[in-house]
Length: 127
Image (cartoon, rainbow, N blue to C red; front, side):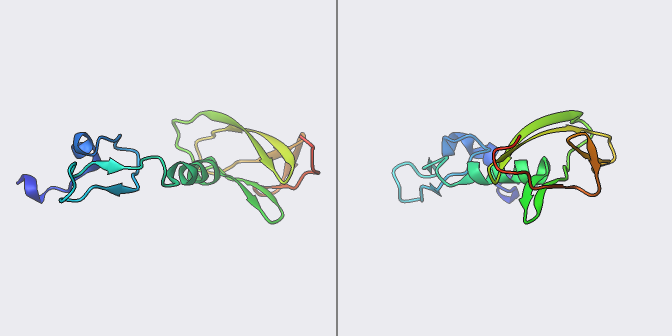
């Protein structure tokens, strides 16, 4: 029965007039002239929160009190990636090679191995 199935966004994209991966601020109600149409898409802060989720928790590069943590959580299909991250006035150039283990094998800063996954804070303006 069609009524028993959940209404997934991709099934009603034509009604919303919105891409299924975009959040809208509101959906017009039954009394509106365009019932079901999404309003104010891309204005919900979703893009900013997706950036935080992707950069800090999937790519695993996030600021902490004593430095910059590099602890990616990526699938085997992602072989490698590079990222430039500015934190507290310093620039970090990070290259990640996927070992397939799911965890960081080692962290090297300026050619020297570091214990753990936290890179110490660099002086302001340094890269």
